[in-house]
Image (cartoon, rainbow, N blue to C red; front, top):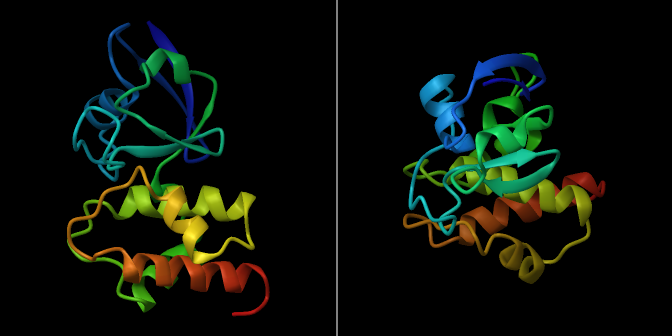
Amino acid sequence: MIATFSINGRTRDVDVQPNQTLLDVLRDTLGIFDLKEGCSEGVCGACTVLLDGRPVSSCLILGLSARRRRIMTVRGLAGDGELHPLQQAFLRHGAVQCGFCTPGMLLTGLAFLERHPNADRAAIREALAGNLCRCTGYAKILDALEAYARELNGRG
C-alpha cells in the first residue's frame, strides 16, 4: 500500500507492507539510518522518532499508522548546515560517546524541554527513563539538557 509521510519536513510516498513497523519503513525502505534498532521491544529508546512532536519507539508503531503524520528523526534537527542548539550542547558537554543512544536522547530531551522548559534535573532524568545509555552514565547527557534548558530560558 502506498502511504504518504512527512519526514523531516519532506513529503515522501512509500510502499508500506501492513506488517512493517515504522522503524523498518524508515531504515529498510527509505534508508534513514539515524535511528537505530536496539531491543525491538520499545524499552531502549534507540529507535525514537518524534511523531507529531511526541517521542515514540518506532519499533512498536506500524508504519501505516504514521501515514499523513509528521515524523522527525535526529537528522531533522539541524538546519541550514548548522547543528541544533541541543546538539551543540551535547557536544560541549561531552554527552556523546558511542552515539548509539544519542538520537533518542536528543529527540526525547527536546520534546520534553519544549513542553517543560523550566524542568529540573530530576524531571529531565525521569523524562529520559525510556532511553538507555551504556557509555556515559547519564551525567553528561543531563548536563547538556540542563544547559539547553537554561538557554531556552535566557539563562544560558
